[in-house]
Image 1 (spheres, rainbow, N blue to C red):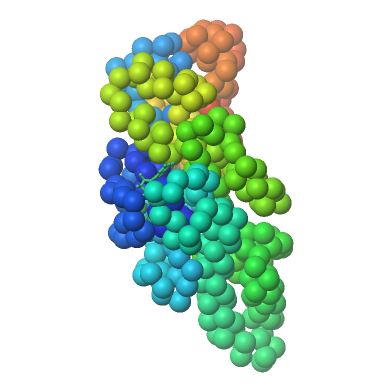
Image 2: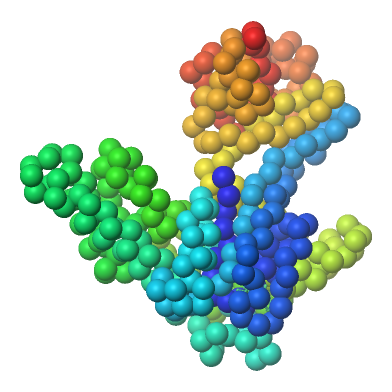
Length: 364
Ligand SMILES: Nc1nc2c(ncn2[C@@H]2O[C@H](COP(=O)(O)OP(=O)(O)OP(=O)(O)O)[C@@H](O)[C@H]2O)c(=O)[nH]1
Ligand SMILES: [Mg+2]
């Protein structure tokens, strides 16, 4: 599962990527600096891991990770191949969620491809290109399904109706994620089509240093414009955070963050949000050798969670011993939790909860 950083050229996507990941992407003050996507595997900051480390004192601690991809900037006409558009759109299609970066800072020295700062226009430009690309997909599919629908094939007629609804939506400037579908219709026709505008989205407002904490007028209009989208809007002073990131000393970084009114980097918040946007959650294993955060889909069952560690654990799953994170912290150790009768034994239908501390029993 990976989240892609998307936006107009020169809005700070690669700078943001560099804040998140140690894989340094080239960032420069000219449009289309990025061409090939940069991929980074990013640790998910989770204070619960530090807590478990204090309690268990393991030899090592391993955080969960999420994959972030820095993609080239899109411009108007990208869906028709403008500015290498088609290639970039293919890069976006391969991601599972979109982090849409909007320039919300004034600075005459940083080129804006459309002449002036206007995050709403920019958002619409990107949305429109993605929608046009999806429209192409819909038209191709419609072409194929039309004949079968005419001959009276019920399944084809259902698909045609669904595709026509998507087409009408896209033509009216509505992204697929904002349309209403029956559940089976969604699974059967929407999911396999991999529409770009069906991917979950989050907006990242790139602001000036002074607005890192409370946002600015640009952020306000972005929030107003997307209020019906049910999408998170994150405020981040990308340039400033990149500078702070350059500092080697933790204390020094903390001090600079506090200066701009933050108690943790906005990029940490962003990583956690991206993780959620990808429908991911964490369970822990807590042994003396290793305390580790593992990633599972929200809604995963205990055997599926076991399978993340090793496929044999899933195949040979017998049961799981589960301790809620809060209980682990309250009682302080696995044995104390057991004594208190708070350890649960769960079977193969158990749906994992975020923060569960788990131990699997299996035979191979
Ligand atoms: N003042 C200011 N400059 C920024 C900020 N974020 C990025 N920049 C500058 O803007 C320029 C472009 O940043 P990049 O991160 O390369 O932009 P990009 O979106 O990756 O651009 P492309 O790869 O060309 O699509 C660089 O010179 C950055 O230093 C910011 O928050 N404030
Ligand atoms: Mg770039």
